Structures are given as structure tokens and as C-alpha cells.
Figure 1 (cartoon, rainbow, N blue to C red):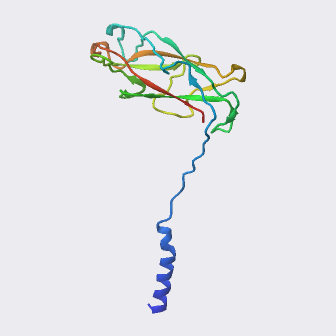
Figure 2 (cartoon, rainbow, N blue to C red):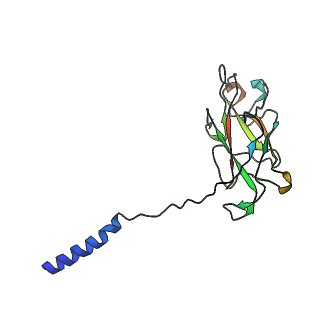
Figure 3 (tube, helix red, strand yellow):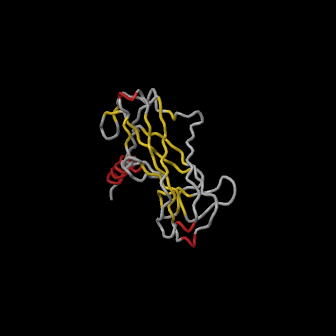
Length: 194
């Protein structure tokens, strides 16, 4: 190989060497900061739901449920003027992102909040499920996606919206395997306006 050929090849390699460190793609962030957003209409922004006391024998099989307890997340100061969402729709709406705080979810049951204890020994063998009261859809935990229920903010609502939900215990084992104890959980609520 001649010196000229070697120099030409070396030059071409040097020319394309920059591509070896080139990126494989890019991430484009797109978003908006809203002037106002919904607020939970409670001074400490806490909704307390008393699920009740149940005998472990009531949960005979995997999937057995306690009575459903309705509760409401009262929201005020919601924006009533629509904005463009990820799907291209222009509307005033939001989705709930429910995130388990301390205990996570029950293994193999991603939409059951794992119970713990605020004071004492925690029960095992049950978890807490949350459903949308109107549709009956299970509310996903620790996940935000297009499957999440969309809540509209009607213009005539003056920014007041009530999100009606239902909570209940669901057994994850047979009754003989349930350990009695406190069955508490905390779920953080985030309103997603995408």
C-alpha cells in the first residue's frame, strides 16, 4: 500500500471518527407550567378513609373483598380553560397518579397497596384496592399511562371538582394464611394535567 493510499485512508478514518461518538437519538422535553392548578379542599391536604375492621375468616379465598367504602377527593381552584394535552385534545382535565408511599404494592398484585401499621403489628395477606366510583375501573398504583381515568373540569364548575373513589381490602392468600394486625396504608395523590 502506497504512502498516499495510507494517508487517504487515515484521513477518511479521521473524518468519520467523529461519528463514533455521535448520539443515537435525542430526548425532546415538552411541557407547560399552568398558572393555577387544582388544590385539595382540606387544610392539611389529607383524606382519611376508615376501611373498617374485619375477621380474617371473611376472606376465604384469594380475591375476596371487604365492603367497598366510598370517599371523595374534593378539589377547588381548578383551571376551567382548556389546554392542549398529549393526545392533542384541548380540554380542562386531569388524571390521578396514585403512588404508594411507605409500603409499596403487594408482590404479584401491582394495583394493591401493601398494608402496614401506623402503630403495632401489620396484617399480611390483604391489600387495599382503589377504584373509580363512576366507571368501576381499578385505579393503577405507581404508574401513569393512558389507561388512567380522565377527570373533566367543566367550565360551569367554577373550578370545583369532586373525584369520587372507592376503597376496599382484597385478600391475596387463603384465610388460614392471613395474619391479623393493623391494615393501614398511605397513597400520595398527584394531579397530572398532561
